[in-house]
Image 1 (cartoon, one colour):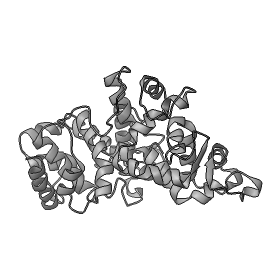
Image 2 (image 1 turned 60 degrees about the vertical axis):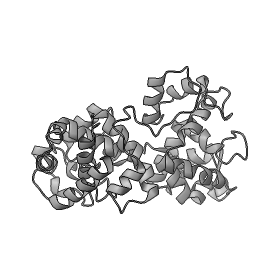
Image 3 (image 1 turned 90 degrees about the vertical axis):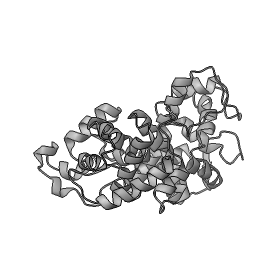
Image 4 (image 1 turned 120 degrees about the horizontal axis):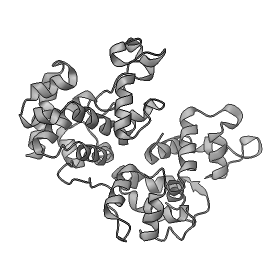
Length: 337
């Protein structure tokens, strides 16, 4: 688990489980999750915690700036190492809109033992944030480009290349079934991925998002529903070890499949997808995986030529679902037109 959104979702859902993780016979709950509670979950104390719960706990333990951001979200107390239900409720709108990056930056200095959580995103916060190995990758790129001199707010919803952007409203226009909340969640990730792959013209963006929308069922799925057992022993996919079929089943908005593709994509994106294949399905990586696939097949060339059938063939290997893809494409052309 690599995203604060995923960790908060688990904490919200299983709050009581975390709240009572540490204490006498694991039954003392005070309505707040402490660092000791998180450690108990991460250690699977008593053997009663799921892998997802353990991953959420480890993420917050490993990333103190994120943990401090939650700690002060409700504005009830200073940083005291305790996360309450009001904190989780207070941060939820910011996570949904992508506007949590400023409060994250504001608490980054506190995570490094400096003054922080003062409502100002300053130089100390920026320098401290860049030292945080768990820093949101979109925010890291923005801060590295801006440098450490700026003291103003950071807009983490803007991609490095403004031309390679899609708004939540445009995503909803292209995918009418997409909720406003879901569109706001994924738009920054799709924009950042398009910037990485130079998908920065209206035609490229329209084709890219149309294909992603079809492949993901309207941005509903980032992981193949099937088990992946059908890929077992597929040497053409690099599945040479027992269990590779299930381990490296399709993930990402364009279904990355097979050990060989996971290895190649991981090297390009700086992610250990071989040992952690589930990372490819995380919101911040699903679009990047798709953009890597797009770049590795030089699909921008076909998009520049306006050859939608060729774009579809390069992604699908044929023309499955062509009519649905074209319907998304037509709406995407209107959105970027």
